[in-house]
Amino acid sequence: MITVHHLNNSRSQRILWLLEELGLPYEIKRYQRDPKTSLAPPELKAINPLGKSPVIEDGTLVLTESGAIVDYLIRRHGGGRLQPDPATPAYDEYVKWLHFAEGSAMLPFMLHLYVGRLGEAGAPLQPRIQSELANFLGYIDGALRDTPYLRGEELSGADIQLSFIGELAKVQRMAGPYPHLQAWMARLQARPAYQKAIERGGEYAYAK
Image (cartoon, rainbow, N blue to C red; front, side, top):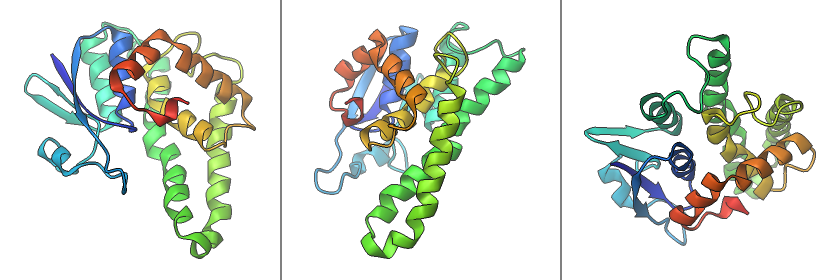
């Protein structure tokens, strides 16, 4: 049985959704953010020394990092689903999107969050941050111009991994100029497996 160490309102929600798409049995060990600081509880450090979620346990394996977990679950338990054939060029494009989410797209959102807390002191950095946000969101929007999902007609692990960026853009009211990204997010959030993961995972502000 796969165990997901799940922090409320976090990127671990993607892992629950992936498990629902794959139809795999799993159990959830829940952790709640501090209501004042929004930080994860120290108990998470017992399974991940960094105190971050998601973490999965599968037998003796303990695995952290969203991209690694998505890759592992699909590769080990997917039976060929949710990814292209690794022998094809389409797989290389899939891997690019899988790593783009955390490797590139997440950084300007994190800067937007932390620099925003500086108030006027952070104002000189905001034009560059906003430019990068527009750059990345426009890039995703363009990739979805003629296709319902990142890799064509079918959902893949890359869509699941990148979905958190779309959710952030939507909740932070940045998605307006990007109609293809908005339509993609509507498709993702309407999927039965996405809805089931929300039911099981509990509080998740980014589903709004």
